[in-house]
Length: 102
Image (tube, rainbow, N blue to C red; front, side):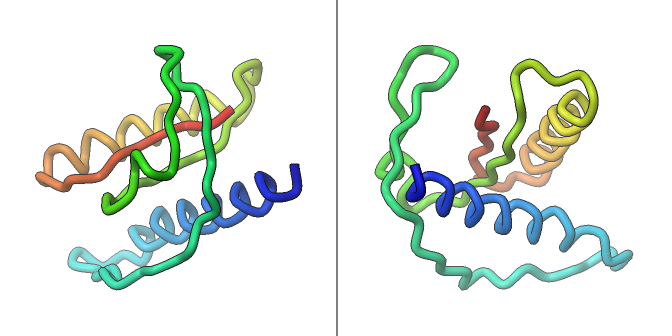
């Protein structure tokens, strides 16, 4: 359990850093493309009952957020913002994978 908590905190920090990078008011903010953070191996089941592991995401850029499936306060806006972010990445031609963990 502690390993997963450590990984979740790490992923949360990455997602927050990426989202906040767009909040500086600059039209052309630059993100360090050499981000290299070690993530411990994980294994989760997606909405299609398929197993997703760190190996599946190796070598790609990805953004994750954490929500509760039974939450009516902050989770709906977070999900909407994640969908908007995913659409913006697609519109910009960025090859980024997105995932929400609950």
